[in-house]
Image (spheres, rainbow, N blue to C red):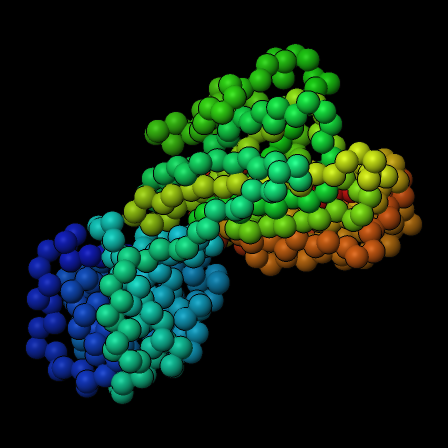
Length: 444
């Protein structure tokens, strides 16, 4: 695959004398990329005659690399489905080469395979990555100097900045979170931490703010269904203990997953920074001595460890300021099946049993998702689209300036399109390689 072709480090494959008698490239920006990045890190495996060159249909020696990179469609299945080129002039965001070089946590919303260079725990420097990006944005010319070489002096390791979320001022709310934890290379990690709020009286939450380190997939807060009194809902997890849903070998930890059967969605976000305020007079209620199960999910596509961390602020007001108690929406279809090598659209109807005023909506799907629509269907059969999202990793969160009023018998309808470019059938599941179909929201 092109992913392998663009990702083999010299140390993983042996010597780097692979250009043979090829004519030297004219001096310029691409020639410098060839000499300082491609030849020392890729060509040893991807020269004529090697198995990697045959499987990837990509030879990166000096006499071939430009013609086989620039303007050439990717052969990797997800990149091909996304219509990426190996290098698309003027568009680094549509160039597989750039995505393969970018190790910045949180950069990769799609799994385009192993990052480059493979076989190391350190990618290109910040300067090298920026040099390649600017070359692509300048049109990816074969000749000429189009990027200032001073950029290459930035030898910092690629990273993403993170500033911890400031806690609410005393008396205005509470903060809870998950301290920094490690996500192993080329893996995913999802965990829960059960937090006790220790509040002596009711809490009325009018604003929800959260922040996650880059690389996050989601942050969710759950209460528990106290009406269910049988096991496992008649027990609670240990307070402040980290509960991973996967064992060290990647298998699911069923014991740690049991509380999920009793969860009630309270709040959540699929974007690194989130801030939602209820309309005046509207608030979510938490009972005295409330507890919340704090859930975070990270996907690390790099060969280096990734730090995870998340926090949430719940801003509160006095009960006297609340005229309506809000509730959450968690409308899920868990019974769909997506055939291999096929685009599928699934429509699910969630009928309201009573009058419901919808304040905000968002969606949740995984990386095969292309489009998520939410429609309002009236009892007479007419439908209106009220929400659309095309970004599975950072879905739109739509707050309605004029709330949506649904009468009993009206419905919210999810219409979700996936492009399953894999070789296997995909269904609902917890892994990033599974899929989901969920409407989250707030209403009263």
